[in-house]
Image (tube, rainbow, N blue to C red; front, side, top):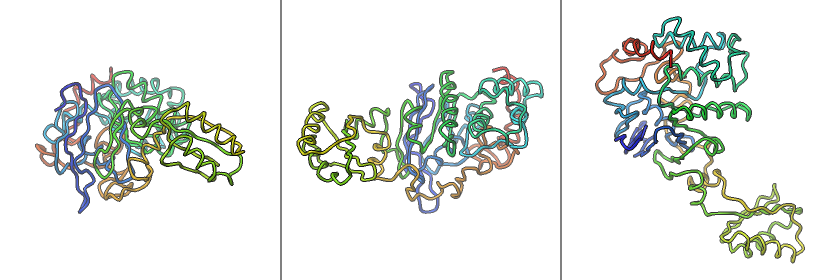
Length: 386
């Protein structure tokens, strides 16, 4: 199913919590070496999809392949090839950045020397070399998240799952993480990114899937999704908010727009246009003729925010779609739950939390903190030099 260069391929994926389908026929294809964004309201199925694809959760139907391996039939092979960065940091704040990375390396059964070498490489790569000996509790939010990202790359995975990686970060911290993600993709890593920040998807994603109620409802590049929402728009900011209604009527006629939006707080009128320059000229003429002063007039393309609201019926990215088990505290979907660590699927810093056994796995077999880690030993020693 992952032919044609796809790193991730999903067909008809289904997962139910009680009477609610968190995934209800999800289809997704992610080409190798790209960033694929997954957008959706809370409860849309984003985190559930990541947990299934990282072998932490058993699906109730459909098929999913990661790096060419079925997540149910070949979970061990999938785990060898992925990294997972959950919604909350998994690093120990009392340890230094270097100690955290070395600890994760030892959990992967790297020898002490190899773990130290790999830690030094990752600290340098993520711009943390100077802070490597400081306790993580003294790091900024952006530095802490970059360290978290580094721990997910101990074994140089081919595919990286980022589940809302910049939640809670300030703009500077988000930019730091974005730069790190771009450098990973430049090196050939495939990234599946779930996010509630529409700007983040716009900045990073080569392609975007909008998910609602467990299904993909739209897919394309950011430009394709914006074009499908209705083309260009004209925005007019007035000096006097009391003239909004009159201006809206005039702009609607000038732009030949069926729907005109007004924002009283911003004193703004916005309308879709088909003929850019004609609409601009007619709008300026109509407002001048009515004696309405404008502070600003601009032509622009729709934002990804407008695309999202249009596709999801007006619910913003942070609003609930009503799904079960997809909230931060939902059953089986805890963002900071045990087993969802930066160090890889099902591997927390303390070894707590184990994914449920999948098809072909016996109880206690192929668990990342038991036999699964032992199976990795030979590959891990080589991975330190990657």
